[in-house]
Length: 623
Image 1: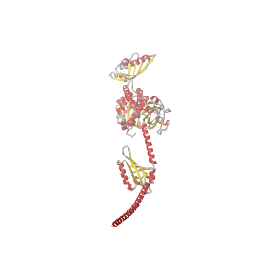
Image 2: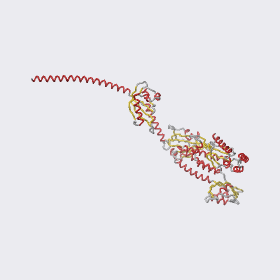
Image 3: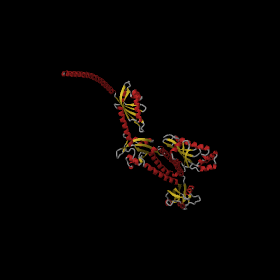
Image 4: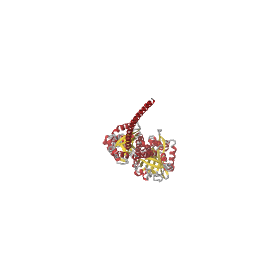
């Protein structure tokens, strides 16, 4: 992939509007802030930043420099190959960064943080306020709003963010390599499925309200968050019955039933239901209740109450997105197969089933070492099991690209040729989790390539072993010739490679040859046949019959001339000798004819004389 500046690269490859919506939803659901920064510390995206950072640390020039230094130091640590890094920023808060890596290139980081693992040292921040001229009261109030999370909570968030960065990386890669859309879409589906699973795990990370009620009095006690979710002020007198009245008609019977079982049977409950707030707003809530039992009787029930509206709406949108993505995958013209770490097939699309000649049921659970697989290498030889694509990825834990194999389909026993790519996916601990193999059918293309190779081989044999001289002459006049051509002119092949065709052409035939070459290039003629003289290495003249035509590429651009050369030197000598004999015989005949003419003239003269005498005698006899 061409190297770009990180910021430009991300803006080109990532839809930040969608990323911002997702990160804002994550912030609302979990209470963890997020940001995407390039390796130079530029903020590309952020959500839910703490007041202590936005109004104090990143505003004051000196503390802002500390922020930048912390961000770049994190980036430096990640550049050394860490999958994530937790760091106490120079202003006293905890930050965590996860790298965004595209095709092995670390281009940015996804940050979360601005929280504490334990109760902060107030004195430290009071001194910091004085040092940098902050309003101490306002600064400490902002400090109180910074949440405290456990390391286990943070670790679950890190797992989520690692998968989030994997999703971002895959999305960017899909946009950058659209020609590989078939493979990229499958990756996106897997990442979306992972997010859906992780959303369920991260519910408990979010800031939630608590409640309790006395079974005897049925009076409830709510924390501030519960009041906020119900959109009532703290003067509201909460009871169990009043609380149940907030639930929608469809949810009310459910909450009544689980509360009844908690009181009567001591059963805990965990439900997600819909309420209508005091201001008429519909909200989804996650309610968990734990009964406290004394002497076999429930005396109190306490639990948590969380607003999960954003998560619920997000799940609906996610499900819609998953359905669209699944529809795309199922209608791709590329086969997609997902393998578990043990190479067993856990998922495939219809095209994969079609190309491999096996039903979905036959494919599911099938492992790479199944002896029924019949794979071939590009030379039609059985492919060793270690070279099976999924085995290569499992062994080397690296991406493989453009692997050509043949698959013998079991039912029809025919061969389908596939071009494959393989991608490993790792879990949060860095262990191989799944392998995705995608492939397209190139059977027709391979057949065409095989036919082309055979055709080229035939041409090469005809060219090299022809008894006639053969040459391929470049438009620049360079020569590629066969053995017969070399033998004809007495040069080696290497000698002729370094020569121009004019150097071996008789000077009196160069102009004629140039005219023929130009006519072929201009398209005035398609083929030329003529007699041409070459000059042998020893200086003798070689008479030849020439047949030549111009080879053009697919755009009709001239490439080279293909010429057949037949040595007619001996034939020319024989023809010249015959012509000389004909000339001699013709001269002899002309001389004999002349003598005959002269004799005929004498004979005719004598005949006329005799006739005259005979006439005179007859005249005298008559007298």
